[in-house]
Length: 173
Length: 382
Image (tube, rainbow over all chains, first blue to last red):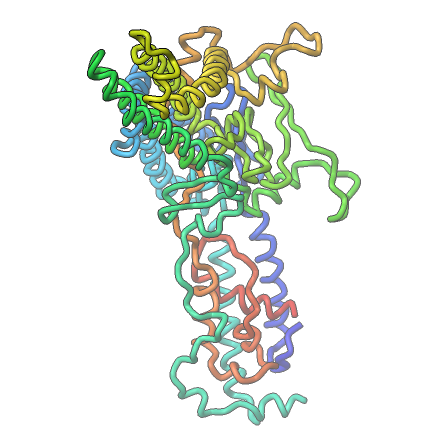
């Protein structure tokens, strides 16, 4: 409980509501899309649409994003002519070539970062969401979090702060 | 009580310059992620190299290789160059370089460590797992598993209590390094590191080139002694003339069998796309009598298996050793101190808890403007 008696009841209730909102925001605002291991150890994410996002974004947009990400990862991990060439060359140079050049996987990861940034700007931020690049989560999950609630909390809290500081200064000794 | 609180307000304090930071909020040096890494690993060169905490017998391995090769180049090569060909030190040199470089790469490369789950992820997984008993913190629930069908095989994914994740297929937790490692093969004390997805090809190159080097040195030393003992001199004379060769002979004789055997074993594993861990546990060998079990990761072609294991794309390191730790502490409280300077001196004022040194609860890394709000909120729960 607050020990500053000068704060009005409305301010107190506002703070309690914000506290609950903040608590729920920190838990409920992150949705995690887990890995799909049905094709083995290749990096692939589940395209199942999470129920928490039903009111936030269209199913097709979400599925397109995840499918595109899966395609990028499949391209990075593809075992074909280019990867064999890279592998054989690396073997002949005792893999020292990995220290010098950027591998195909790293190039694709850069493309993925760019794609995610673009998706965030064009599709997700207008809907108050933010996708985190899976590489920052150890390729375990694609995490989606809500931006809107955080911004609302911020605005309310600044006004409460202003109220507190004005009360503290004005009170007579 | 009320009056006493407000008597302590000092109007002079309002005009004071921005308050000095409290000792616990002094600006901290920005740290790299390797410095706060939770596993039992050691890092060198500011996070560029990673090695297990216990280096095992890596110094012994290096020492033996350097010693034997050194003696070979110093004592045997001159004789063999004179009597045979100068290709011998050249071939020996190439093999030696292969061995040392691949050994160092195996030891100092991240084997495929999976970073631990963030608290939000762990909470999300907990929510998904049905736990009807409502266990307390001291009771460890039964092992959690998730089943997934890969290539018509049922594979069980186990939950790692340390890393708080469901381990991907072929991933295992190394207790020595305290990390989950992808495509975990084994923890090799000779190289002082785990062998996993990212450094298996280095390890394979190491043992194959080492078996060639050992066999080569063994053959050359035998030839050297044979040539010396010709002309009625005898083996004893030869050994007396070149005592170092005796030491090399002993070392090579005892190591060539084990290393050749290991190379052969790993060649089989590569051809079958298996890991040592799976082979030892008999995961796919159908020991339980179930004939339907087979390796779901194999391409059913030796060449394709070899290519995918040894020549496949090199996955990146997932642990981002050299990234910077986000400095939440220094950002969170300093803006609020500037906002409410008058409250600093009074414990009962609203703002005091902000500067009381209590660490605010961790916030999602979304908007930095949010940070001051958390501080006030934490006081409201007091």
